[in-house]
Length: 331
Image (cartoon, rainbow, N blue to C red):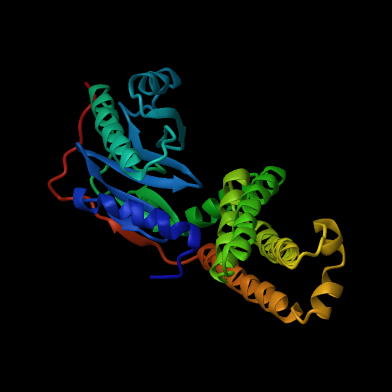
């Protein structure tokens, strides 16, 4: 098992809830693969979006747009449906609670599988579209592919093609920066609050970094090295700013307790002079340093996981098709 990023660890814990249904979790692709009602499904999570997908054809034909729109209208917990090559992906409605989204995914797989089977759809190879008996799900460079033996032999080509596809996905950097800053400000507020209600925990630096990572990932729709570098830089910057604000607020409060009138702006502007004079500067420097280090360790771990995930590696079988499996024929 390789390095798992901070953002992926929670997703993998959620996907493991489907183990009891016969699904197998692949940590590299952050997906769960298995059969439901006779149809092979892949459950995946992109950012905060939950999806189910399957590679199907009916009578050798791909599903038409009208049929996909019909599925979306019939299944309440699905909000969109798209297909690429032979894989149809159904996007789940957004919900707040993990238990509810799990039930929604199970309901969606049940309803979708029934609609597919009624229209004669069967599982096929994701690349060639042939309904052969040797289809297996593979982890190829961090993505799930449903491939037949012939297409699997050419997997090196598909690994490179998928990498090109990943590189072609446009990253919405301005939106990522905006959402990242919003998340970072939430984490920074936690540091300010902690300083003023008791003592500062260095773990709040990791929380700030986590909020930045989540915000950028959701906003940009794609986490890149630029995104991680941005999050690393902002972790240090926001840690410094929040600690300075928090320490200034605490100093103003202390001054009032001793009957001195010190306004926040003056204390913030003359921060170093005041803290150096009163021998408090060491505590501030230590707080910024420790929080920054904890946050940067989190970002560095995600960067290492990303670099490892981008490396081409041999394909791994996620789940093999049972020998007794029979395909449905078009009606």
